[in-house]
Image (cartoon, rainbow, N blue to C red; front, side, top):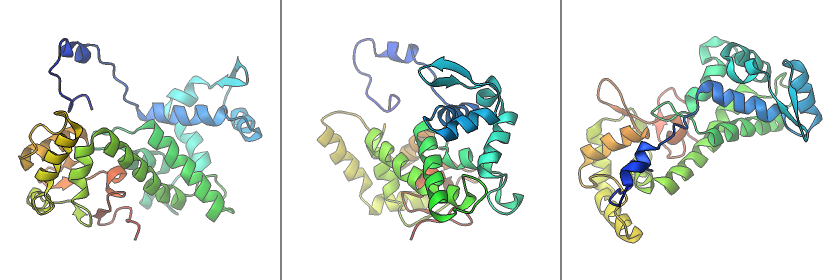
Length: 260
């Protein structure tokens, strides 16, 4: 949002100089999940704490998780495997659950929103209870895969609210399949009247927020790659992370299928 916002006001440079890095690593995300599980006001949370190290009482029913549970990847993988099983199928050919989940929730810059992360796993738990009650783990791999659709829907809602022009650009690729050639993307934008739509959006907002150059499709692609909405392969073809692709109804051969 900051990168795409106008900065023509006094002391605008000071905002960038005082920026703080709020990116979440994979260890941070799993640490957040286990912290939430261990602090839920339920008997299940007490059982969870009893299984994994010494949780230190903080008062008012709150607990601090052991360091290895919130910061050590090897320990975190063991904990998550106990919740979801080791594989995204019957064997390792479908992928390992511990790496599969964050990899499919990340954007083109490898970033995962903690809200999207918790929403996906909460949705997977609900789907497991509803459809796979006899499964030996709280999270079924098919429920995890299905939960990506809900996570993608919410992430695209956030994108539409925060960077509306980026959502408008990707909307015009609906029904296609990645990877896409840049020429195909430009054709979709031209046929969908993207340049005119971006001009109207800017007028309606009454400000100069938006892409750096709405009339240049090459500049738009570059800016969307910089934002992590699109990714560029070494061949030059363009790809779209699953966390955006599914809600925008864009396919990928061999990937998580779109809802029909």
